[in-house]
Length: 507
Image (cartoon, rainbow, N blue to C red; front, side, top):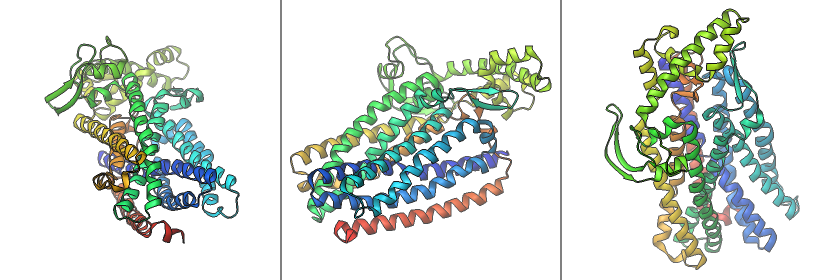
C-alpha cells in the first residue's frame, strides 16, 4: 500500500469512527435513562413519566438511526481499506464483530420497534421489559466492539501460525476477559451514561430557562442530575483502572501521554502542564504533582515508570530479537519441516512484530543496520503533543462535569434548580463537553497505539489494502458528503422536536 493511500485510509477510518462515536454514547446513556423513567411510570402510574419516556425516546430513536447509518460503512472499511489486517486477524476480530451483530445489535434493533409501537399493544410491565432490553442490547453491542478493540490493544488468547501466516484464536475466554477490554468497556459505557445525562440536563435547563414544560423539565433534570453524578464519578474510578492497564501493556503510550522522556525515581510524578518538544526529547515549563503517576500506574510506591528514552533502548533490543524470528519464519516458509527454525521462531515470536517495523524502511530485514533499527525504534513513539494534551483536556472536562452534576444534584434535591439562571446557563453551554471529552479519549487510545494496528504484532503500514490514493480520495469525499448530509438532518430533526417540546411532539 503506497504511503499516501495509507495516510488517506487512516484519515478516512479515523474520521468515520469519531463521527460514528458522536451517536454511540448518547444511545448508551439515553437507553438506561428511558428505562429508569418508565420504571418510575410503572411504579407510580403518573402519566408525566410516560410522557418523559416517550419524548426522550423520540430523540433516542433519531440518534439510534444516525448511529446505524454511520456504523455500517465503518465496518465495511475493514474489507475495502484494511484487507491485510482482515486476512491476518479475521479469525479473531471477525468473530467478535459477528457476535456483536447477531447477539447485540439485532436484539437492540428488534426491541426498539416494540418500544415505539408497543405502547398500546403491550401491558405496562411488558413494555417496561422491552425498554430494559433495548438498554441492555445497546450495552451488549458496545461490549463486543470494545472487546474487539481491547484485543487490538492487548492481543491475548491468540497465536501466530507460520503455516497459514495468520493470527489464530487459542482462548476465547482470554479474549473476552482481557483486562484491557474490560477496563475499556466499563470506562466507555460510563462516559456514555454521562453523555446521556448531560443531554437531558441541558435540554431540561433550556426549557426551565424559558419557563416552558416546567414540571416535565424539573423531573427530567432530577433524573439526569442523579444518574449523571453517579456516572461521572464512575468514569474517574474506572479511568484509573484504564490507566493501570495501559501501564502494564502499553508503556510507550503511557510515557508519551505524560511526555516522560526520562525514567524518574519511584513513585513518578504526574505532569499537569508542559510544552512537549519531541524533536529534542524534552518538556518545557513542566509542572508536576509528585507521586501521583507512579501510584496510578503501578499501584506501588517503589516501582518505576519507564521513560521514552529507556523504552527506545528496550525496543531496539526487541527489534534485534524479532529479526531472529523473522529469519526463522523465512526458513519455515521455505521448508515447513525445519524443526530448528520452528524452535527459534517459537522462542522469539513475541518480538516478530518489531522486526516487521523495519519493512517500512527496508526490504532486507535480516541485514538491517543499527541505523535502521534505531529509526524503526523511533517510529514507535507516537505524537507526544497530541497525546499529552488530549489526556489533559479529557480530564479537565471530566472534572468540570463532576462539579456541574454535583451542583445540579444539590439544587434539584433542594427544588431550587429551576430558579437558578446562572446554573441553567452553565448547563446549556456545557452540552458539547461529554462529546469533546470522549473524542479526546478515543484520540488518546487509538493514536497512542500507533504505529501498531495490533499492538506489538502488526504495524499499521502493513495492514492496508492494495489500493491507490485516488480510490481512497473517491470514498473519502463520498463519506464526507454523506456524513455532512446526515449531520444536517440530525441537527434539524433534533432541533425540531426539542423546540416542539413534549406536548406537541407527543400529540
